[in-house]
Image 1 (cartoon, helix red, strand yellow):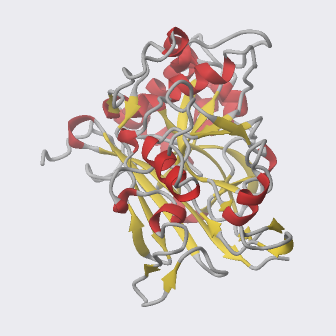
Image 2 (cartoon, helix red, strand yellow):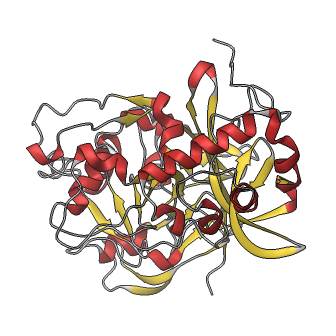
Length: 417
């Protein structure tokens, strides 16, 4: 394996650190002695107060013509920054790399670096809208085999368009937020009538989430080849799912209460520019060939995920096998003229691969609870129990053998109320 050789920085960051200068994700933070929320950038195990440093450059006349980064970074979410669009995002990243690489900036920047352990991380965006897709052929096939064993595993439309559903933006929460077990109606096939109560088949879904900026007008479209103008960055996403509520309610209009109670995302948003070295071709869409509006620069991403349940690794999903590209998902989302807003979020859908160890949900890992997992402590799980903690991490290959870290998303299940 090639030893990582990240570009130099005046900070004491190991070359193999997943949050080196090649990564530089954005988040929102506050401190105990200063509760005001503002934009931060992670470098190593430090958080740079991006707005404070940009203000120094602006006030000293060290920043030329360009976006007012100081103002947009001294706000409580990334939304104002997202509104600036791709050219500004590129300028900002180049500027951050410069001030963290060139020792001439050390004295001005150092006072605005804070230890990661000394800050509180918040939801990085005000989620304008949330859509979740269903882009893994292996996941869709497994679900079809579980729930429709006597029919074709894939719906007839699955390879023609990225299937998705609209979720609830207001219940997207940042990593570390507890998840209360949802309550609703459920009805197993042999039951004569539905019952009401807490879900007994609470599940996870390991996904990537895509953060959107550069708002569009109603009636316009985003072609595949222009998707990068709007795809700002990536979060790890856990689409918590109550399978029993979902199974009873989803016909004919799809997921509702079985999905809307909570969606957890990582606190750090990794820019798409940091993931350029991780771009890979899609597995292939020639049979059938997709319609023209879904053709173009439809790249995949070589992102490696790991899912832990109470500390036990239960799955290692691989995003590179996903059938649909985020660019295609965004193109399909807008092809009917639906507008996007700064802070929109859409999920990839469960990331699952062809072998059991790469399945991204307990539904698949335990084959709907019939093949329980054994954890390191000797206990078994078909679905989640109260007190269980689920943690997902991810990384992607970077330049020169470096690893690009995507952080983590974690949540603990609390009893129904």
